[in-house]
Length: 273
Image (cartoon, rainbow, N blue to C red; front, side, top):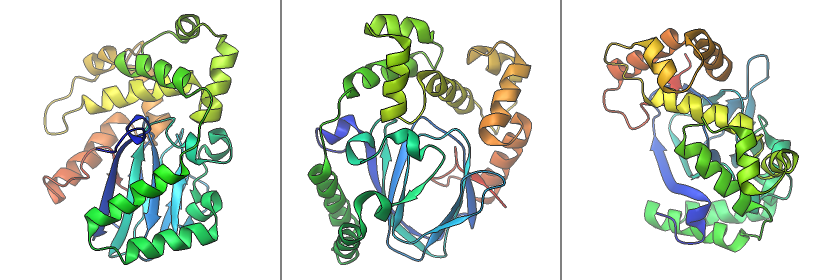
C-alpha cells in the first residue's frame, strides 16, 4: 500500500518480469490510469483501430481512456509501474490530462530524458523488486505537486464509484455546489474525461466484474443490474468500450481461463491474437 499522501492518488505499485501470457493483450477502458517504467526491451501500444502501433522504450503514461488499448510485450518483459486512480496522474503532469486522453505518451515526454534515464538506471541496479518499488515511490513523492480541484474530483468520483456509475450527473454538480460546466472542466483537466464519461466507464466495469465466464450468464439481468435501459443499450456500450460483443468477450475470457488457469492477469486484459 502506498504511503500518504500517495495513497490518495494511486492504488498500488507493481513489478512485472517474465513472459506475458500472450504476445499481445487488449486492455479495455477502466476507471484508472497507468504509469510504467520500462526496464527491458521496448513494448508497443496501439491506441485504437486504424491507429499505428507506437514503440515505448523508456515507459509510458496513460490517462483515463475511452477506447481499448493493445499492448505488445517483448519476450521476456521487465518493468515497474503504478496503477493510478482516475485523477491520480494530475499532480505529476505538466499538461491537462485531457491532452493525453487516448494518446499514450512516453515517460520521457512527461518528465524529460535526463530525469527518466537517471530513474531507470537506479531501478535497473536496485537490489530486487522491493527496493525498486521503494525507489519509484520516492520518485513520485519528490515530483508530487499541489493541484487545484482534486478534492472536488475525488468526492464526485467517490459517488460515481459507490453507485456503479448510476448517479445523475446533474445531481453531482448540485451536491458539490458548482455548475455542471465547472465540474466537467475540472474533470477534463484532472481526469481527462467528463464526469458523464467516467460514470459510463464505472457502469460498464461494474457489469463486466459481475460476469462469471465459467458459468451461465443471464445478459438481461446483468444489464439491468448495472443500470442499463435494456440489453441492446448494454450491448452497444460494450462494443463501444471494448470492440467486442458481450458474447465474444466471454469467449475470449474462457480461452484465457483454459490456456492460463489462475493467471494473475485473468480479468480485464484479454488476448489480442
